[in-house]
Amino acid sequence: MAVLTRNGEDRNGGGRPTAVPRAGLRPRAGLRRRGPGGGPTGRRRLVGVVFTAPVLVYLAVFQLFPVLYGFYLSFTGYSPLDRGAPRPVGLGNYTALLGSEDFLKSLRVTVQFVAEVLPFAVGIALGLALLANRRIPGIGLLRAGLFLPRIVPLTAVSLVWLWMYSPDGWFNDLAGSLGLAPRDWLLDEDSALHSVAVMRVWKALGGNMVLFLAGLQAIPGVLYEAAKMDGAGAWARFRHVTLPGLRPVMVYVITINIVYLSQSFAEIFILTGGGPLGSTTTTNYLIYQEAFQNNRFGSASAMAFVLFAAIFAFALVAMRGNGRK
Image (cartoon, rainbow, N blue to C red; front, side, top):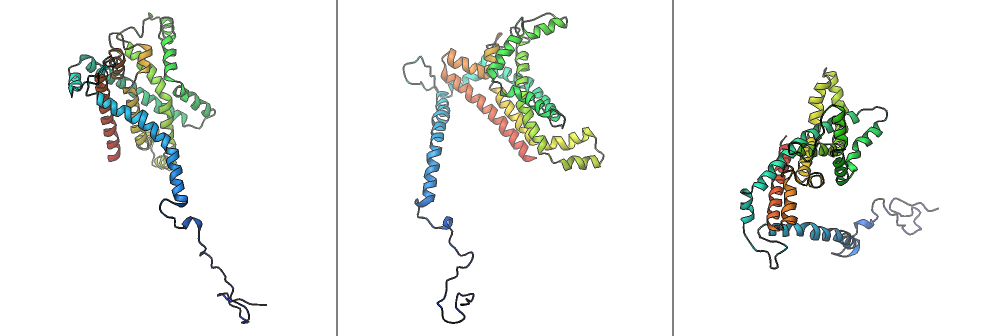
């Protein structure tokens, strides 16, 4: 019987050395060198390009190109009724906006609309998230019911609320049961924008609640336990544990709500059409009127980029402020 040494040699001297592969020295397939552009690595890159190409083409054709072309049109006096090429006007469209009463009024309406909706959409959603974060029977059904407005299309919601605000709608029935006189909620200059804001608050609650709920569940429970051991009450725990832990989520929720509310269109289009007397004409709705009703695409493009610059500036300030802390 031949006995092999660690080097694979027969101690009896009669056999040939036997090759014993050492552990850990076997070549791995993934570590083989490949030539540039060849082998599996090159094929993986080709597959990646093939799968991402449709998305890149879509983004370039339907996202990037319209933005760049719209920016170009903002320096022209283009109208689809003109047969010639867009007529360059330089900064004329932008300077004209500074003296446009309609545009400045639309900015004021937009700011007022955001200011009315934002505090309630954020504050009530935070309260609902605190409620939905409790461990009580049927909490899953409660969360689903609170989130339901988020998944309903805005157009469908607007149509339902249009009926609710009608003379024979639910709000006038409620006012009658309270002994109040019925009113035209969407035709009254004093109440039209407030009525749209109420609907928009209801629509925003579900999405904001889910974001706050995720933030609440990410706060470590040991922080609450430590606060209790220090004698902190419920309000102190909320101020010193919950709110600091929710600060990044709070900044994000406020930012995206301002972005969405500043671009409000569907609810204005369906509920009020910008009226009465322009009291609900937001900047985004005015852009629609300028482009598709007045056929002034150059001026509408300038309005769009002024609105974009304002929204971008606020978002940048909010994110930078969150980063400093």
